[in-house]
Image: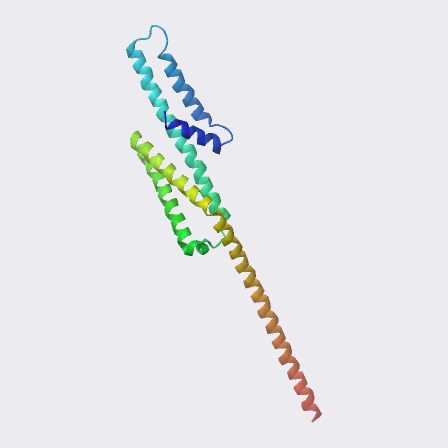
Length: 197
């Protein structure tokens, strides 16, 4: 149970509405526990209900990790979308991008492995992999948040770089135009004096 409380708390923070599938699993878990306290219950029935409750508890963990991973993966994609035209290699001499991609790759791989392991029926190992993926995605999210200021700086620097390119292009065009005018007029002036003499 000590794993479920923080997971449920995180879900409540990230999602405005609590996912129904997790709510149903919690209700089913509580229902099986409550059945253990009826009058006249045999120990065999109680064990059966506790086993069913443990199954629902495991489903709560699985569903919680899955919902959290979907949210954190969407956040990573949103960050990538928001920084699409920004030169992130400007941050920390390119180390930011390398670290970001390394953590993201590890998180994605852990999530994929967890899904594969769950399909094979290795629930304990899958749960550990989901937890690993959750920790990696959380690390990624924290890494991004710690570098918000640097990302804003890179955005400013990238936009400044683009503006500089535009200004240099305009300046080059203007200089070319002035040179053309000068030579064009010199040719006319030369031809004018040539006709005079």
